[in-house]
Length: 192
Image (cartoon, rainbow, N blue to C red; front, top):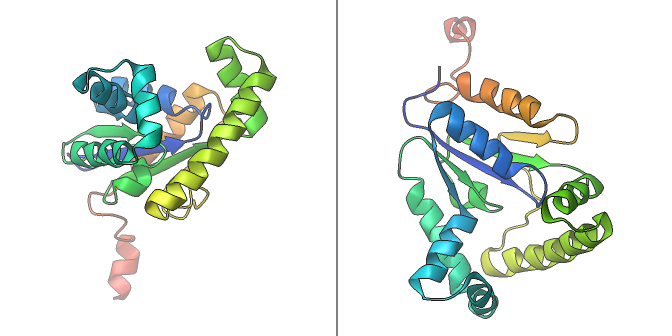
């Protein structure tokens, strides 16, 4: 039985299925869904800029990334939230469950191409370039290696399951969370 106040992070690269999973979790559990893209859009509005203008501004101002991350950390102080973002697992250190979704780049490119209405090759090239830039940016800004999976409680290759299957795996993990972490079985306690 999970505890009453849950904070879950869902991270992954473009086309891995993070938004689909987060929407399903929010709908099923009534969680608030916080995602970096929403925060980014709110910041653009606060500065009176279009999304395109703000993206260009953010490229030249690293403090924008830091503010997005700060707001994610702030959101984690609420109960029953699912926070979506590539660095959410790193930024929200005390999350109850940290999830990383992955899939081979060809599969992710296929998904992005379908979603964006572009060719798989265009999606592949865009993903590859963006991931290279982001990896460098995360290392420079935070010293974070985005390829380091050691902080995640659950890593799922979403090419093996559809959205319902991925949701079922994560639902099982959430429904079986111990309130204060795995305290071991009763038999193990008797030995102490």
